[in-house]
Length: 253
Figure 1 (cartoon, helix red, strand yellow):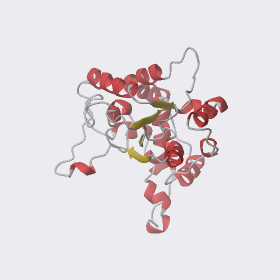
Figure 2 (cartoon, one colour):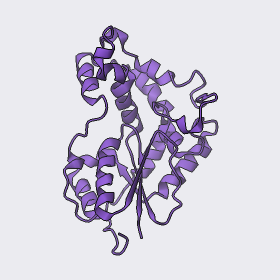
Figure 3 (tube, helix red, strand yellow):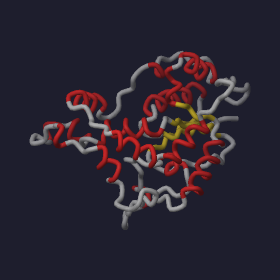
């Protein structure tokens, strides 16, 4: 019997939309709802819990994250009166190259965050551009010293989840309909609406005013730096016979 829904909010992969959707699902069925973001994902261990998350093509996810809060400080965009001397401009926006490199000066697969003496509860991986799925779902959250091991750990964990939503497929009405039917023929427009995040309007406006410069060589480097995430995404998104959503078995809710 399902009594709990555990949702891993992967940043810039329709996480806000899906978090609201699965909160509605949990409420509909009387389940407890747990959502985590920026912290290590749990390995499915509880029989009473439905585990779910989402994946988006890694390079597209990284670029979206860059445009959202990588170019300018979100807080400064949202509260301009508190920062009267700050005006978003092309020449004060962080470049994509800097956004990719700012996590750590260490080699590309040795990204480590030094938290010093900060309490463990404050440790989060909030901004991420390189192999983020391996870091959120793998065993080595802060460092990818053993990339192969992190990949296998993330893969096994995701394969044990009850549902992995592929963000790109949410634009398909049949995919949306399958999700709604799976959880009891829910009637909600959440999946087809744009759910606004903390600085969604502001970052979109300023990105329109000053479009980001994405160089071909930087894009190629970003692709190379995410090769393990891309491999993981492709494997989880491979459905040669299409996507078939099961009905929620009777008696589980």
